[in-house]
Length: 397
Image (tube, rainbow, N blue to C red; front, side, top):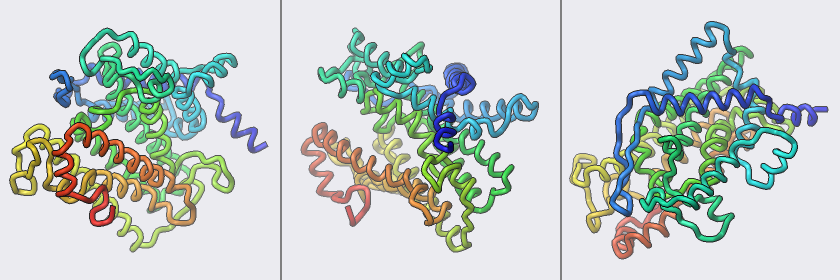
C-alpha cells in the first residue's frame, strides 16, 4: 500500500503542471522586462558577442515578495511546494525525458514538456540557417549524441537566451523548494540548528549566485556547452531536486519522507563550527577563483591579490587561485556541496549524494575541459600545465 501511495504521488496533477508553467512564465516575463545590468558575453569564434540582461536577483526578490503577499492573503500555502514535492519532481522530470518515454506518456495522455523542448532545440538547430558561431548548428550525424549534447551553443526563443534562462530557473527553484521545506520544518517543530545551517548555507549560495550573475557569462556552460537534453535536464531537474537532496522525498525505507524533516540531527557546537568553516573556505575559493577568472577576461592587466597577473602567452592566467591549481574553482564548489550535507550528520550516506555526484561530474568535466584547452591553446596550455601541475586539489591531484 505504501508503494502504491508513492506511485500515486508521482502522477503529475494539473495543479502541478500549472504551478510549473506559471513559474517558468514568470521568469520569462521578469527576465525580459525587469531592469538589469547588460553584460557582454565571451567573444565567440566568429568575432561576435552576445549580451545578457543580469536581473536574476531582482527577479528572485520580486518573486519571493509576490509569494509572501499570496501567502499573507491566504491565496496559497507556504508549504505548497513541499506538499506537491513528488508531483513537481515528476512533472519536471517528464519535462526532460527522452523521446521513447515521451511517446509512451503521450499515449497515456500524461502531459509532457521537456522532451518537446529538447526535440525542438534539436530540430531548430538542424534547420538553423544562421552562421554565427552561437547559432550555427554543429551536427555529428549521431542523433543520440547531438540530442544529448545539443547542436547550438546559445539558442534563443522569443528573444530569451534559453541556456541562461534554464539555469536561472533551476537555481531559483532550488531556493523555493528549500523555503517551502523550512515552512514545513517550522510547522513540524523540527527547525533545529542543523536545519538552520543547511537553509542558511543554501540561501547564501543562491543569493550570491544572483548577486554575481554576470560571472555566469564566462563559465564553461555558457561559453562551451551546447544546449541539449543534458543541460535542460541538469538545469530544470538536477539543480533544484538533487541540490536539495538533504530535503528531497526519498523513496527507500527507512528514509521515506523529507530527510531533515523526518530525521532530526543534533549537531554539537564543534560540528557546527567545523561545518561553518567548510562553507566559508569553500565559498572563498569558489567565489574568489571565479571572480579572478571573470576579471581577467574583462581586463587582463587587472591586479590579483595586489600584484600584476602572471599571464602565459597573453591568454592564460597563471596567478592568484589559478596559479595554485587548474580548475581550483571546482574545489570550492565541492567544499560548498559538502557543507550543505554536513548538517545532516553522518548517520546516512543519502544526504551526501549531491557532493558525491558533483565530485564525479567535475572530474569528468575537468578532463573534458583539459582536452578542449589543450586543443585550443596547444603549446601555451602545455607551458601552463608545467607551471601549474595540480588539478582541482593542490599538491594532491
